[in-house]
Every structure is written in structure tokens, then in C-alpha cells.
Image: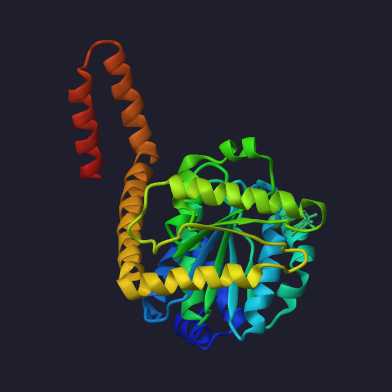
Length: 324
Ligand SMILES: Nc1nc2c(ncn2[C@@H]2O[C@H](COP(=O)(O)OP(=O)(O)OP(=O)(O)O)[C@@H](O)[C@H]2O)c(=O)[nH]1
Ligand SMILES: [Mg+2]
């Protein structure tokens, strides 16, 4: 595979080149990793998409929302990429099939590009691959990159750390269920969107929206937010109602952040965060080599038997790692 041609294809916005490049960054093979690094270095860094993270529990309507929201954006002339971050994608077999039918219109839309999550169980690996896929989409000239996750474990934090804005999709519910949303997730959300505001659920959705708007006002004000944010809206992804207000709210937020320097500031902080994560991950990977495992087992036995002091044995272990 010629990396220069691949880079040219991506910059020209060719979908096949983009798809092949994402496959490359998803690969764990050492030669693929090297080629991927080479490719990423050849791509311009001056193209920036609006990266929107989107999370919500299974069945809340993420796929339906992405389809409607994505169709609205492409109708306005924007190019939209959809990526999924799903650490538990042992289930992807089914969910890809499901999404093909649920995002039927968007998957046939020339201005849209949909890519399911790589099948990987390790969140750290998924995070790096997803970040690189986002960069590839930006280099390919997409205006908006939607990064979807089904909020399990730490995946919301992972997605928030690669997004310019984070949207939490919720279902209409009674007041007591408001407690069910973890405070940490409320704190990373820029926009809470109550979906299924249609039919019998319309008035419940309006009440839920008001409840969350109230709860958001009680949170500590964040420097990166203009007055009135984080905000809550109500939509019907199915009936395509309220989507334009939601988009307007996102745009207002983003324009404010750009004007005040928070856009650049946040991206810089995110780059720092990922650098530190990668350092930690590489160090942890060093513990997994056969030699390290042997040393660890041997020293740990010696410590358990009282033959070695824990701190002294740890120091020896680490200096052996460095020597390798
Ligand atoms: N009434 C109503 N139903 C909706 C709406 N959005 C989605 N649904 C329905 O809710 C169900 C789940 O929708 P999905 O879009 O597949 O939800 P999801 O969050 O992607 O689910 P997972 O992929 O399993 O995590 C489907 O039956 C949808 O038709 C809506 O705005 N109104
Ligand atoms: Mg879905």
C-alpha cells in the first residue's frame, strides 16, 4: 500500500481512501502501526471538524438521532462522519446490522460517512484508534464528526476527551429517574437532549427537559460555558422535531468558545491528556512482556517469602525494565 497515495486520497475527500486508512489505524500489526504513523504525519493539521460526542443508554435513540440529525446537516451542505466508540463491541455483529437499517438514509447519503466501532475489548486501544479515525475524517474535510458511545464504563469520558462538545441523550422519565444519571456525566455534558418528545411522551419529555434544565443550573459554572449553558433541549429523532434548535444551541456554544479561546485551549488540554494516557499505556504494556512477567512472579514470590523487601524488590524490577 502506497502511503503517499493514501494521504492524497484522504485529502481529496475520497471515501474509499478514508475507509482504508481507518482500517490501517485500527490494525494492531507492527508494520501497520508504522504505516499509520507515517500516514498521520503526512496529513495536514489545519483542517478542523466540529467533533460532537454523543452518548446514551441502549434504546434511547442514538442511531435514530444520528440519522435525523446527520440528514439535517447534510441537507445544509455539510459533510458528516459518524464514528462509534464501543469498548464492549463483542456485540457489534448485531449492532452493525441494526444500525445499517436504522441509519438507512444517512448510509446512502454521499455527504455522510458511517464507520462502526472496531471490535476491540480494550478501551485504551479503542480510544487511540478512534482518535486517529477522527483525525483522518478531519483531514478528509468533514465538517462534523459525530462520535457515538453507548456509555459503558469509562467510554463517556474517553469520548468527551476527544470532542469539542458532548451531548447526552436521555429518555423522557419521571422525576426520580433524574437521580439515575451520574453526576460525573452531567458535568461533562454540554447539552442534554431529551429524545422521544412525541406522541404520548411529549408532555413527559417537556417536564423531563425542565427538570434537567433545573438540575444543570445547580451545577458549578464552568469557565468554558456562556450564560445559560449547559443546556437541555427536547427532540423527537423519529419525527425530526426540535433538531434545528438543538443544532442552533450547539453552534451558539461553539461560536462562543471559539471567540473566547476555549476551543483552542480545550484541544490543547486534550492533546496533553492523550499524550499522558499513551505514556501510561506504553509503560503498562511493558509489564506484559514474558520477561517482565517472569521477573514480576519471581520477585513477588521472594517478597511473599520474606526474602526480599517490597520496595527494594520493586526498585530492582523497574531498573530491569529500563535496562531492557
Ligand atoms: N417515539 C420515538 N421513538 C424513538 C425515537 N427515537 C428512537 N426511537 C425508537 O427507539 C428504539 C431504539 O432506537 P435506536 O435509535 O436504535 O436507539 P439506540 O440508542 O441507537 O440503541 P442501541 O444502538 O441499542 O444503543 C427504536 O425502536 C426507535 O424507533 C423518537 O424520537 N421517538
Ligand atoms: Mg444504536
